[in-house]
Image 1 (tube, helix red, strand yellow):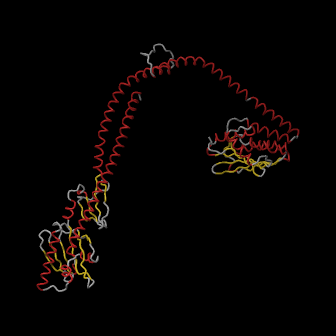
Image 2 (tube, rainbow, N blue to C red):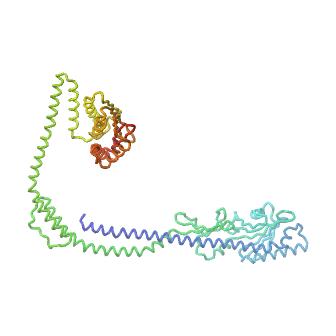
Image 3 (cartoon, rainbow, N blue to C red):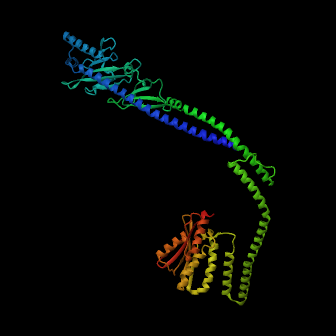
Length: 557
């Protein structure tokens, strides 16, 4: 991709990305804030509406109590004989009381009086204020009558389970107890239909999306045209009033998103305007940058083909900016390359000499191998078995140490090298030296750092057995948590526990003491070739010194 298009991509990235982030963040912030504000507003309105229902029913109850507590109503309901002119006059007075109650209810509710003695129902029509009475068979008593009786004179709000389009939705009433007979003598009640709820809702802004629910969550009255979808609507529910009612209203998510989008449109328009200005600036800037760079690239291609001559190449004008600096440095580089080419032959000759010297350095080890082989043959003919064994062990050790092909060997190869070393030391110390090597078969093929065990065993001789003149050396290996731990212990230890801990820290941190240089070298090489390994650790317990080396076999590099 050409540089001018990269600049264009950078411009688009630096413009569109912040714009998109800003629009997204602004949209989300406005949406969330608007959502919180509207939810709080809707809930406040729903709470007030629910309180209005509570106050309205309480007002109806107060009006109903104004005649509920009169002697005329009580005597009319509780007397068993209802004949003659006096009974007719009592009935007329009670009917007038019922009409007064009906008139106080703003023409939206009918009033009922049920007399249990003769199963007669008196109903005052809210619209015409006429009184009708009829006998209701005991088996056909309305459900709200029986529900009201069970509450012993307390106010009851009963939902009409069989309410239709022209049927009341609720009944509000009280039972009239006969205090002498200790029984319910009748019921006085008010019905509430759709007109009541329409009048209560009025012109409230939430009226089109409102449900009134009872304590069981059953919808009493709803203005919704279709069931709400939880994916598209937010439900806001009011607090519960004393009758267990709640008012639920629904807020459209689409409306929230539309308002939020209208709020971020100006930001989007301004961003588009800035993007157009940026593109114009890019066109001007690309001419100042890309054309000189194209000329420089063309010259670089010629140099890449082997043409180091500077003839015919001259910038159109001298520049004092970064591009002019690049042109100047390129010319200087081409001149230096020409000088370097002249030295290439000399470097190749020096490399050939170095290779010859490396080949000569390999002659000395081969000479020593041949000499040791000759000594082994002479000793074998002379019957000097001990000399043969020592020469054989020394030859194997020397061959192992001069093999520079691999830094990582198997554990068995390193242990074989130490066996040769201990065999030679055994001829020196004879019966004063005992050693034991215990390596599980499953660990013999484990990878290990070459020549890492010999410095540890040598320390056991230098600082232990050589000073005491005798001792035992034990070499053991085990595996734990993905690491192989190899421990060298000697019975002639001269360290205490504090000195061992101090020496461990010095080996791991710097290895500054002369006695720990070899161990520090092994520690660093183990951590380099086996990352994450513990390395060297030195312990002294009950006069016995042990040096362990731990490495993670799966981390071999």
